Amino acid sequence: MLAFAAFPAFAQHEHSKPNATADPFQFQTVRNEWLTDAELKGYKLESSVMTIAPGAKDTVSHRHDCDLFGYILEGEVQIGLDHAAPVVYKAGQMFFEKRNVLHSLAANQLTDKPSRVLLLFLIKDGRNAYTPEYPAKAAKK
Image (cartoon, rainbow, N blue to C red; front, side, top):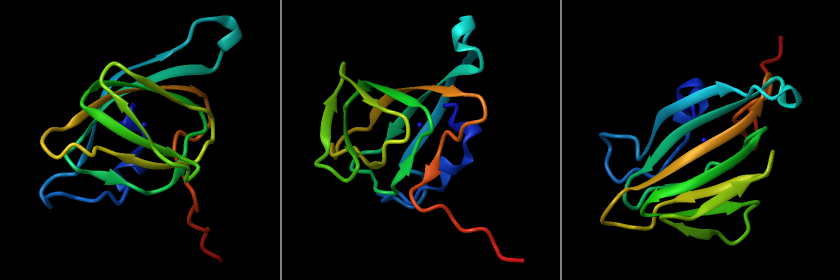
């Protein structure tokens, strides 16, 4: 969303927190591999499982400079792109976010159980996997 461990910016999201003791969005790296097809030189697959706590919502708009696929393993996830009406994806369904589309919402509307999503990022070397909608401006010297 993922090596999310490789993308510390994800940990900086301001999520709604059902409790103050744990981040309602947890990420566990699954596998990261450089692709071997000569036509895809410099591309890698980064994958992780995102667990969203019951009732958690992330409204921090951001972009991924890569293609992103999400497969719902458990529960359901509400995804909003470009501030359009969100779409709900349930276990067994997959969503796709094209490169640099504005991701404006991720939420688990279930109040009784977490939702889990396998995230697959196809990213070219040197591109940013995560960029806030309004990046912080560099300090003037």
